[in-house]
Length: 386
Image (cartoon, rainbow, N blue to C red):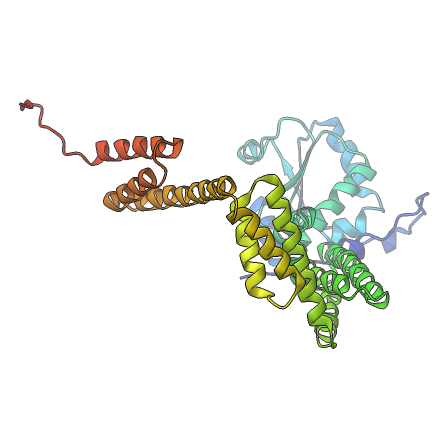
């Protein structure tokens, strides 16, 4: 369950500062209430959903006094300090256990923490107004960003880096919807806009191919846009365009022709590379799926060059046996992991029968011996074999 605290965004709390601080009338300064009890301040922070600003010092600390009279009373910090934080001053001499728990070793030490006590900044020593203001703004931003949004934004960023746009879009849409105008919500909307522009570019390229008469290429580009940018408006538009294009007369036949040509080209590559079993399979598939096309006849002739040559056909058989042996090895491993030793042994014996006097047979024999040694009954130590 997500819990949203009633926090004000950093932009609302922190107006842009002028280059030169303008004098502000004392009466216009907001009232800042400094708490002195930690437990009470924590409860106030949790009730209001505001971060804590804790200043730990001592009475005799020179830089503690300098911090109090300087940055902590600076008119530029007053609005944020009064409305964006629960400010707390702790005397280390009076609260030694708390100072120890916070691991304070230098005075003053300023701690910026979330309402739940999670520390976002730990500043040792005196700090200038500008640096303190920056740390305070970062804390407000972090606290106003709920844990789920930060986690999802991080995952979305990883997905974008990996090119997994569908997952990134899903995460970013959820953040943009629930985080609203918080910084993480604004960033999510910006990233979504970037992804949408990329998808729109793919869609525009596909439409240009269609206008140039390259129907098959346009369909491929549209399908890629739908697959790569699923979840975007451009991907939805690409799906509609793809469906409309597929209904046009002649498009289906053009696509069949292209697929047949690609399969024939792949079969010829396999033939030249000596992958004869793969070549035979592609030729058979092509002849079966596209019997009316010229490519089917070319595939049949290529298949004949393998089957009509004993040396080539023998090589194809060896490649087929290698594939079958690999499948039996995988099956034996699967049976073995489930404790079915007999079934695993049967698979290994099939490898030995299928590929005698080969490295596959040797490996199968070694695995079979190992398997049998695991399942052989143990001989009691007090007995001896005859």
